[in-house]
Image 1 (cartoon, one colour):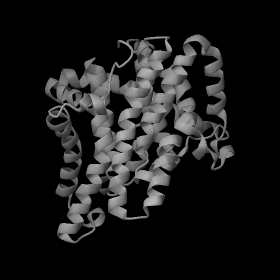
Image 2 (cartoon, helix red, strand yellow):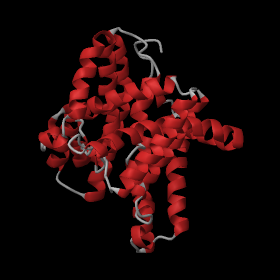
Image 3 (cartoon, helix red, strand yellow):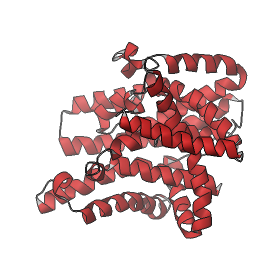
Image 4 (cartoon, one colour):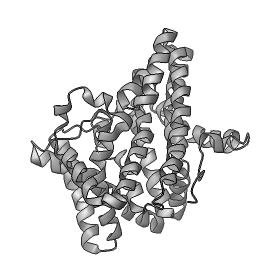
Length: 340
């Protein structure tokens, strides 16, 4: 379990870093590098655990577990966006309703100013696919492979209207199956070597070819360019598996660092949901107080402080406010219908 928390902690640090434009804008290629694999990890992670129930109550349970915090933070950030940017109340309500019922990155961003909340609807859709695959594995895998091989350009702008990020989930599903296989054979030295080398080679190839990936805007890579397509698939899969080896190496090197990253990983969901709001508030506050553009004028210390606070503030919020006022189970419900 420590390795799982380490992986969650490691990747949530990369996600916060990737969303902190004040840092990524200063390091050429960093943003593109992170988006080639970092958010995939949280969608691949469930595949190393078996589905615990074949009862429909399992899906209902996961709907509460994933969609209640999604709705809470979607509404919160949408209100924050309305106050910050101004706007017409009717447009606010219209955008929010569309974001709730469609739950795609496009409509989520229109409502809240952030598109990253798409992750939880996508995770729910992915869980539903895995649930269906318990009894219809070949059919689900076949359909998802077809989606994986189909260039997303064929969809045009219609991807915006496919609810709950279903296309993203179907794209991820075959990758999750392969990730599960590699994880189960991770003690094999050949698998370990191929995973690490595969990540290094695919990352280097994508870098020199300047291939941009962003699954939240359906920029997946296309089978029409086979080398790009293979590298786009290998990079997140092998990167995900490689971090398990990194976890074991860091534990041997420094158990303190390993424990710190594991502790961060145990708060990965609240960090994921809160950090964009905090970063927006933090840099707007600096802009208001010091009258400068934080993207171009902030010094290195300010950027590092902003990044660290984006990690610490959500943890403090969870430990001392959400738990203290006994609202954790309302925002992050768990185990409502099935024992997990």
